[in-house]
Image (cartoon, rainbow, N blue to C red; front, side, top):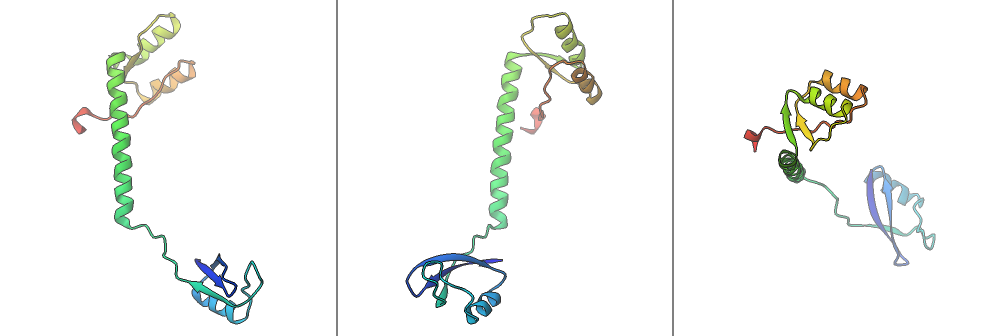
Length: 138
């Protein structure tokens, strides 16, 4: 598909889509293309600049987005490390203890296997899984 800016003899311009430039020429010769303002078939196509995004532009945008997300995750990690207790591999046990014993907790973070995570969720224990980057990658 190709979009053209079309100009009528009345001076008005409008846009229309065509399968190809050959189709546009064929329809124009048959006088099937009409001005949406005055119904004239004396239509010319105007020069349009295509909106093409270059491969390098896509890579640049993706890289900026990835950097932004990594920064947000890094900031979030710093906040959690400052305000919560690291219980390491004992996360499941500590989460259950807080939940069932109605303990007050500052908040915890740690590691849990996918199976442990599923079990905690099935038990109604609210947890959140956060993608964690190794500090060595920063």
